[in-house]
Length: 441
Ligand code: SF4
Image: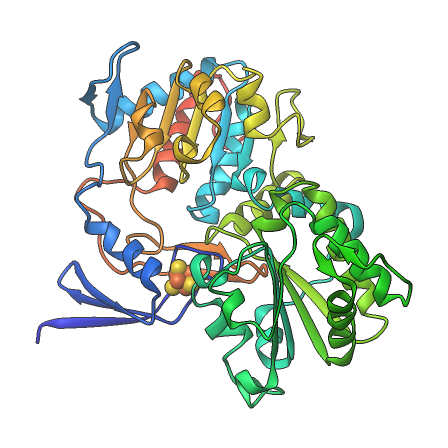
């Protein structure tokens, strides 16, 4: 009694972007969720967790103590840091809305900075490969309704995208896959016998870092040519079996993740995976989809691309957009000490970047925009709290297959807490004033 259920809520955590979540509310408090996986449930509950930042904070150089400041002060200070920087770095973007990302890209442009999203430490190599050899992709709806072969290569959805298998790949009954699980074959390629691998019809235990060789061998046997008896620790017979199974299916899907993008060969592994997928279309219908991580990392790539032509690692320091990952991605810039200020939003490089990169971050003027205390906020000079998109704020996000979904607002943010969009808009407007750029330009 007194409880209210909001339906069709979108989960702002992983790239599966589930849009069938129910949230149970008691007034403005989230009591429970239905349909969400354990990670999604925690994300919704994090809105009222004790580790929310409730007011902007500033830290003097050389101290570890933060002093609470007002939003007006923090926004003015942030604008001054960014307006006076020669080449500021903007990084993160994957856990905020497309509307906020759009303002962020303009901010990078007017300050002659570099803007980069988490793709550069995630599926950036997939993007490089797609730019080289193409992207035979489809939407997850097609997978659900047609796919009778699912390959998870170097990814572990049971732990990282927990509802991926139940919503789209293995278990759902689709239009042409009405027997659900019984109509599908699951193949997992991974050095470890993961929980996903334990469910597989065919498990291929590749040697760590040898995916390129295995994909190359698979491509070779698919074309009917011979290969050595063992490749990447896998016997010839098993590689041939996979090629034969793949050819015998009506609609195959290759999902791939960090096990191939972040290991030896990086984007070249994906080149080979895409090339094999393209080859497979000579025999049957075959597609691939990268298991994009954060719920809106795909959106950041989309927004950057339609605004300026490049999907990540975009450098405006010459006054026009330039793109050269290896030179213009966040870690490249930090490790070579090439930025003189940084703004981090909706991500936590303090926890996920190499220590050397963050040691430099800790020495320059920095701004972190985040709803929660994180290792990044702990080493930033200015911390600006924000509301949580998809829980306390509406916003557009793109699923891993590039399908846009509008995230809903289910509760009000804590009193006085501003959205990413509003914080960025106010910083941008003030930067334009400081730089003498007329409003509207
Ligand atoms: S699978 Fe991903 S999007 Fe779906 S509920 Fe879990 S964390 Fe959220």
